[in-house]
Length: 71
Image (cartoon, rainbow, N blue to C red; front, side, top):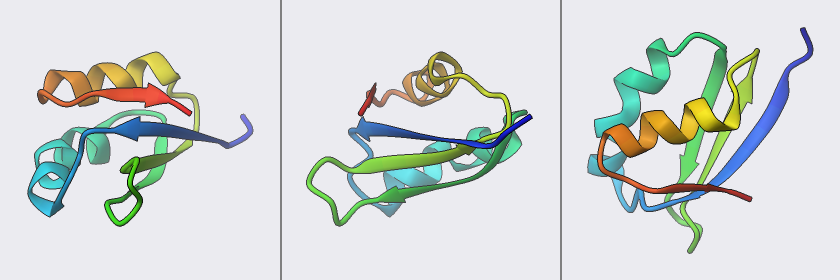
């Protein structure tokens, strides 16, 4: 399966916010790696996907109390 890059505008404003979703994203099946650009005004979450869907990533972020919208 081909790797896809998924991007989301999020409400992950700082390292503390990112740490709350870190273990869920680290352990999610279908994610190669991920990163949040907290310096960007839109707090862009970039996920290198090996099968995880946009909906699954959004659900993980939402489960921790944050918003994620596809870019």
